[in-house]
Length: 79
Image (cartoon, rainbow, N blue to C red):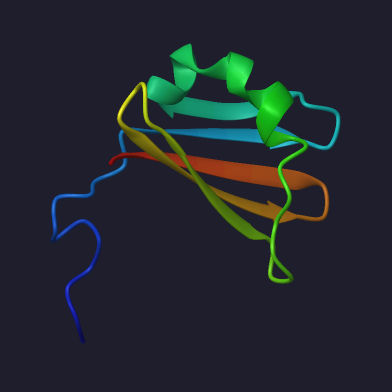
């Protein structure tokens, strides 16, 4: 099996999980200070499997998102 993302130094810096009404279900790490991202992330277009990825160049972060029916999971990693 190949190296995982965490083996390459891309450990998550934080998470943010919210429901279809933008209510926060769970947040950790830098996700605690990025709650304002929910407004933009809730409208982000995802692919057919529910995934999307964007970069916050100003903060030096990669934002990975997975949406499944009524819940969205966001993982923040260093770019």
